[in-house]
Length: 281
Image (cartoon, rainbow, N blue to C red; front, side):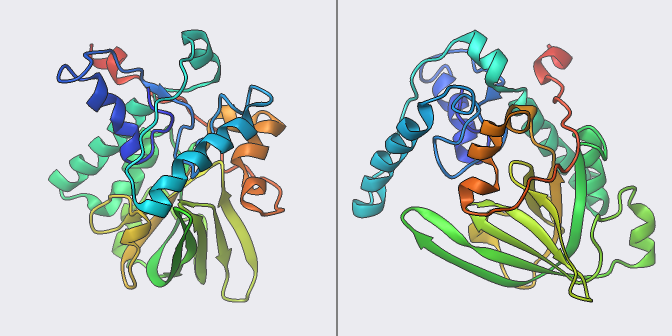
């Protein structure tokens, strides 16, 4: 089982569990339900007091050789129990990732990329679990690399859809007009809408997931792929209750851990993903 489902780390379990390596069963779960910059930001740590500092120390020790001398660093976390995974893990996240990928591939094959956000939202449980936050063009990208983390901000300006395209979408953007600003620390931290009259509204924030999709392909863009002029959809996905149903979860996974004193405003209601194994086995 991987600590996080996000990025290449989420696929490591398939590599090491394969018959080529250890030939072991992969668990359809992780300890984040998304990605976070630091190892200590996981749902098991959020439930076990005293673990946060220890996990952060491990993260810093392992990150240092990669930053200072360019080494490749790998780590195997300490064993946990099936009971801990069931009680504290975010379940069926591999299934969720597979289903999102299937949505994008189906949209490509059926020439319906224009409604891929609708398809993803439906797959994730509907408009209570996921929302199209904004659609527009990237007009500004700021980023810098500091001690192994990417910091910066993406600025998206609305690019109004044609009446024909508007008619195709079942779920309209939450915010319209003006700009959307998304600060990042490896991951997208919050999405703040700035209306044409200057009114500012936070439309999503961690631990809810903020994904920026390439409107031409439906695929998520990572920090290195943010470019001026790219047309994007900004999607928000509700966080697992493993993060949101306790003050400690929000302390570790919310805005406070990134240095922002902003009260958490839930995006919606989390819907547990359907297991691919149970559906197709």
